[in-house]
Length: 392
Length: 160
Image 1 (cartoon, rainbow over the protein chains, first blue to last red):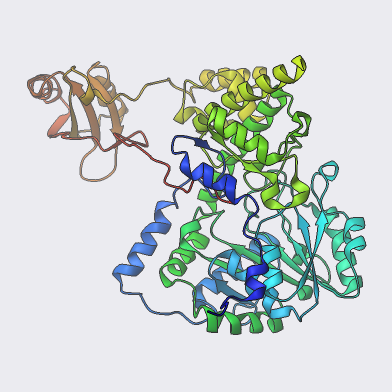
Image 2: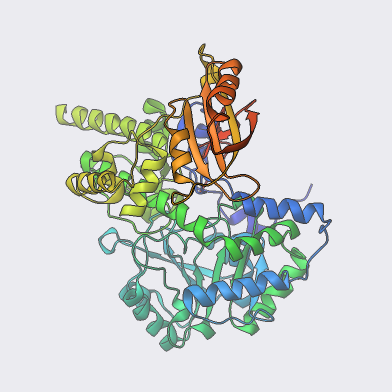
């Protein structure tokens, strides 16, 4: 029989730490700090609106780019948070999660051989999506000494004549890093100079703990060269509803809509109705959740300080990213040993890029009680490791 | 810090200063001072425990009583409210808008005790015009807490 598989797809490696993930799935009684989604349920009034839309029989397709009312609310939201105006008629598309937006944005702009700059550590989908779009991914290795922010020097070094897109994933999963206004201004200047499109993945924008999140699209000359991606998963605890959106130049959104139209048709209708309500009335609930995350973040940072575990203070998302290089193990070895000995699951940094070797992603999308128990186990584990190594 | 402090304490009054200081990114002393201030200003009025008595052997019966009263000259409802809330078995008294004036909640050992309270003490007060007593059959949610709630984390164990 012939090999029916596509070379392009088979060449993409599955997540590098599959083996570790499989062990975690096996271990039922482990405490996990390994999840990249909120522990909160979707606020009730949002769920209620979803239910209501079903009761009303709103079970049809929406327009390809999404409910007009939702696009208007998205436009309002970005206006009031970033002071940028996107026209709901042709500059916004509602997608199946932020993930789809990343995929179709790259497919809409890439010609074979174009280069896409991807800072790592970062979310797992940028590189494969770039490859699927026939781009050449160019990885920039972010540094702990810069708090995992992208510096203008790093960006300049990665740019070639073929560079077309910069992926800007802030607030960042897995590091929790953010980019502040002056950081962004330097990046924006280069993007304009070198005529690069920025794919700004701002899915964690509502979860920042040092001033307000700023979108690079709000800087001078950037709106026309930025595709802003966001969604409902993280801010409104709506991961399972699969709803995101992209805002950008009409020409790009138009081509993205074409792919979306043929591959997806439209984002789930129930989710869209619920999301309208989320944007209209959700600010207070988001703030409550943000406050909870912030308390847990402080708790973890303090705990790692007490443990003497090297960890920069992250100001975004719901992750901390401690360094475990002192133990002379790889991230995966450390995580596996921690899982086996103390039954605590964390994600090895290397899941998010080779340059994250020596780091762990620890999620604080868990109750404080849960975090306390996990921290006491990690503390014991770290102490034991230090004791053993001092005997050698 | 005040709002955030209050919202934490409202859910968990047992939390210690050390932990509060970490969660709020303040020193223990700052937290302690703020709590003392809140207590002095009568913003924090007490620290209570939410108990599901149904799970104990102790018998308790609760009732909600709607009370219509005649407000008194110069004192409005305050005087009659005080007459009512001074009884230790009365758990709460609210002045409310709508079809009646005071909402009284009561906790007693038995149905009979509640009936006795209403007929002997409450109804006989001069300004009380009428009462309507509702017995509580089951508590689903109290003080923002769902009684008998067991939450299970149904998320995948690990997810990038």
